[in-house]
Length: 423
Image (cartoon, rainbow, N blue to C red):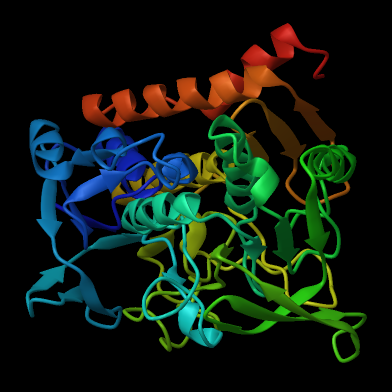
């Protein structure tokens, strides 16, 4: 019998548990460990931050769902991974042994790297977790009573840009519904070298599409932006010409701000030689397996991927749902092979597919592979993207409740191929 432990219960962790259940032997056991007692559908957080969703709408209690699937569950945070002794030490002091460990924790949010950043003692909001998003909504309602300038975007080192674009557009849409958009100057601040870069070098014409959206919505932007510090009502930004040369300094007043932070690995794994890189992200090979510790796999945002290209300001690489789905499928199949005395043979596709909702429309893009040059490089926009995102939310939540692991993104792309000129 093998003990298979999955650390994390998000968009990577739960599908991993469901896929692993199909790949394991009858005598094997799966245990999911999470610092939250619930699953949260992170892609809906920008909606929650303007009150279009509640926490109850986008969370699912994990214990009953996993019990029904015959999967063990521990609601406790990981304090330390001990790969030499094949165990995870939890915050409660409990130790959990494993034969195979899958790390799917997502990142730690590095608000502390910039003075004044973040909702915990800082002056900016976040949509990175459901609690951050619902807290941002409380601040949003207060802001709408006395509107003024907004600064929104992603700081240096951030590696997930889609939610920042979404939230900027969703705020614009919500303000128009409230008939107060004319009272709110908005500036988008990003480490990206240009609008629509997304950490991917752009996909299709995301640069043109997103710049056009910003112009149409009267949203100004600053690229190559390094946030120096945030004070109450004021953001200090250096616009960089090169990594060492400042092109301009900006002092941006705001009454409301949401800035995505940089990511790093969680404290439980940081500093473990051979397991993680200097930022604490899990090192994996083409089979999602750690080269030093062959019984540890990594999936999702927590894994190490080198930046696409040098840029004046540090820009991270996103890990989209399509990529995570392929990592999960490969990892489960590879552990299944190891359980049966075989060598891993499955690889993730590492393609990128995203539905970015703008409240009353949106942009979809597909990159195969994620980094250029690509075999497929496509982007499109329209109201259908908004409804597709709503459908994705409902589908994925139902899938989690039912314990289903069939791939969504492969199906979605097949559907797009049929109804568009995507080839």
